[in-house]
Amino acid sequence: MTTDADDVPTEATVARSHDETHIYASPVSGDPLVLPGEATAPPGSVSGTAAGDAGTAAAPLAPPVSPARANVVLVALAVSAFLFVTNEIAPMGLIPSMAADLGRSEAQLGMAVTVFAMAVMFATLPLAMLTTRMVRRWVLVGALVIFTAGAFLAANADTYAALLFARALTGVAHALFWAVVVPAAAGMFPLVRRGRSVARLSLGPASAGVVGLPAATYLAQQTHWHTPFWILAAGGALLAVLVAVVMPSFRTHQGTMVRGEFPSLRKFIRVMAVTGLMTAAMQLTWTFFAPYYTEVTGFADGTVSILLLVGGFTGVVTTWMVARFLDRWPVKAVVLGLALLLVMWTGLSLGGQFKPVAVAMIALQGISWSVLVIAVVNWALRHSPWTVDIGNATYATLFNVGNVIGSRVGAIMLGAWGARWLPVASWLLVAVALGLVLTMPRGAGRTRWSRPGAGAGAGVGAGAASAKG
Image 1 (cartoon, one colour):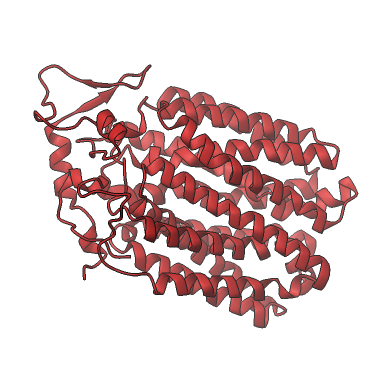
Image 2: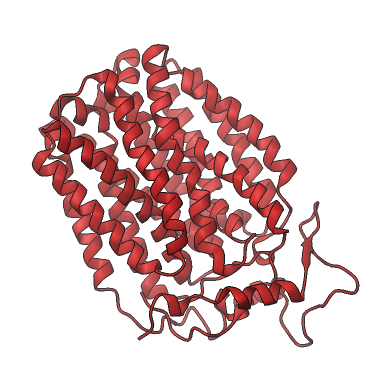
């Protein structure tokens, strides 16, 4: 039996590979360019493109961009992710304002979350498959353009139907963005730094809980719920231009991530089950954060944005800290996140009516959810039996299946029994997810979908012969 650390290629191996050959991508077509006089692939080896077509992609010898430029692009993508996630979670703080303005109940406004999640759920995998051979830069720019249009429509929505249409359109943009951005960002860095690059990208969406959601809630309470969407539309337009300028042109097979290090369909299916359960648990209660904390705990409406800030701040700090450990303990990080989340739901179920307990559980939610989201996407990429963009898109689809189911079940429970019982249902779902992780079979992860040497780790040192968890 190996340890998590044993499954990770050494940084020295990746660095040596990077020093030997420098491969660049054409700024227009994205085709690989090897500079004259530079080392090329050894005779008889399979090129990235050919290997990708054959289903046994070999890992590229070097990242497709310099480290300095990769870091600049990562910042731009993290800020873009901040906008996308702020838009996604905005209804958590805006539902009361939307309901009052549109003449609907808070439970009905839960459809703003459900429609969005359904659009993401149905669009992610088809869009990933349609764009898998396209240059990553233009796919991401296209996602930002669609996002801008949807946010603009939401900023002008004056009916329930118009709001739901705008949410569906931004859901399609969200699907396209998240189907591409994680493998695209990680593909600009050496494989051994994948966990850290994913964690740093995640600082953007984590910051949405600190700045985006509280700010959107505050602006809606002080002005109108349309105001946050005007700001999101303007930001989306600016970032579309920025990403078009700074991001290099490359395709999936030209990055450092083509397939998972330990492809296994059996393990990947279990990872997807955990993904759906954990997101359903979170959305079931957190979609109705404002009703829960005003009706059950007794906070005033004006304090909701401050409460959200508590969870968001702890989430950002946790995201920054977990980056250094994710590459070394990828599976243990998943267990830790689920265990902490189980403690959080226990606290709300038993003591949510007490303000000190409720506030402490918000902070714990920020910690546990930040660890869990980063760890599970990293875990999914490790075991993807297909190319990483398809594996990532499958993960994103199951993530939003959980969002749809969780928000709908939460709306039904809210209307029938009130907000008091929401954390109890979330606790049950997380307990099942934790059980699936703890009973995960260990050992070699090969299936009929993968062949020896097909994993992304094969090209950066074959030190890992088997995968744990």
